[in-house]
Image (cartoon, rainbow, N blue to C red; front, side, top):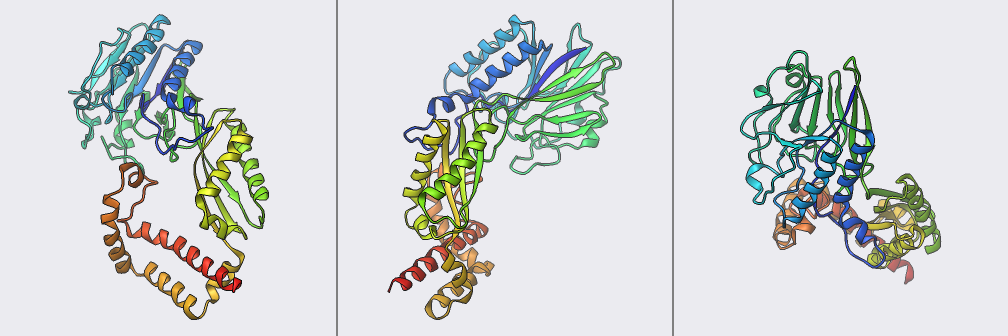
Length: 421
């Protein structure tokens, strides 16, 4: 019997994205999260007395800012060496050969697979052979698996590959391949990387994405870690997910329906946030808070978004003992009057609402509006306009989603203003 750890997408020293600094946020816990997660992996490997560790690409996030990233990795690999644990890895699209301008000599327990062609590395004393190929360039468009050798008879064969397989949402289609092609090699385990969400594509043989070891933005919520694999004397495989993350991203959905006071709303948020913190086993959380429902506070939210965002942050600091970082606050609420009025508006308000809905339903009008906004988008910094949460002002679909908020805000204010007169 032997054990090994399969991990991928460490992205060592990658900056966590979308986090705004503000008083009371757990900055220190977050800044070095990827390093602490790798330390947790090494500690787990030592505690479980694994024979080897597999890293399926994107160990690094690109070339190092300085040599400290490489030195930190050397120190962690030396810890594994002292425990007699070997490491086999392939480079992925982020740490492909042509992207890394700085290098160091790794400890001799670390094997980096060739980027020229698939390589087979035998782990002596275990009857285990690992087949793998690193990325030579960041964008590998061809299927690498046809060149992988067939399984070596009498050995436990592992395929190590950085790939999108048949494609995964949110991930570039690098080194595409098929399950049929992977199974055809007759390996006993396929250790994949590149896709950041944990997924078992096949049980027999196991074909596995372990996900990344530390979430880096709001699209990577929930526990992150590695797969601990046990192979018994009959070469039967069992797998167990082991969390390694030191900081977790979560979405907090709060139903604001019927809330009429600040205290009521904050109490609802606090209950949800504390439940999420308990579920994280006291790991610090980066939290996106989304309010929905019909409430008389709707107009106040939209008139002073900054005030309410910081009310929520203040509550997170108070109730979360400094363990909750509110990444963003979104309000998808409606006011009671507006919820009724929008469908029955007449006169100028009805015309305004109808005009907005007309644009939303007219693809050519949306494309024209997106074209006009594209110049504005070009002037925005990358952190505002890029990524899944960016301002995609050149997208008709994104502009249509904005018009929902525009209609609610304008009509809501005008209806409230009319009632005051």
